[in-house]
Length: 398
Image (spheres, rainbow, N blue to C red):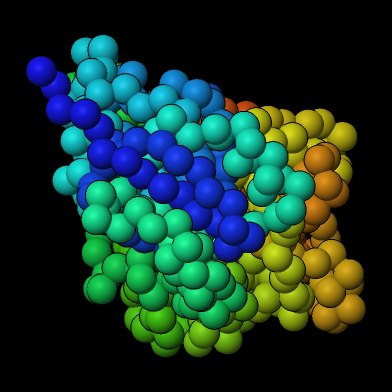
């Protein structure tokens, strides 16, 4: 006879309790509860460092049916605080699978719960906004009052520099290109010429960003988040990239000053948290969204062309458009989210700088906006060749 699953409890700070069963590590963890609306890519979500500090709820009901494989990992390990789904499958059916989802969660120390009414939970977050929760998959700690107290006493994301938890300890090179669906396939053997050097600030970088940069012919060096501008100059890059990452961009200390200095010298491209940090470096401000954008079906509008792309997004903060207008830098808002009109893209009118809030590198997709990596390479080449080029020109395809 199979052993009955252990109980799991999710307690929210407002006192709401959700009951289910444990499918991961047996532990207790607190964090900000959010939801993701993607239909596929649960492994990429689990291993995205941008989820540090959060308990992730999947709105799609059937999770785990394709298992886990190392090729799809976006980082060395999961950084999220917990995982919730309506159904978690223990026996995957997929020729690429190397491990079941419950086994991966247990090995990674991540508590997970299934059997929870995820529709009710998502509605509560959507209507009431982010709130902290405490997830217990420990059979010895199922006291609901204590779990509510733990949820209420957990620190908010504004109080924590989560980038410090996920950034690399020292610089390293990356040379793996895009995966093309064949086991053991090597990266592109003849990348575009000439080769360009890029320094990537690791605020919680996803591996597929690095792969996309290699596909563009960049020689990639990844550096820790606290790397100074002089240290970047010593690497003699042609461009600088600002990566995605978790939490409140304003809590990431000692970075924006160095980013500002680098914007005076190099082409810069930022994604997600990198986009927000670039906005802060240029004198803007950010605000916390009610429940954030998490999923692979967000509509992003290009203000120059009027075209709408379906984008993958994962963030709880947004750059304030009005703050940029009063900052003194000639910065344009290039893209907006059609669901709430928040800023989705920025570009400098004089310097080679641009950024997007969404994820052009998204794996498994959508791939509507991968062309931004082409534009980054083009901007870098034009700058290296001595041409005066602005981010606004490149962001508009000029």
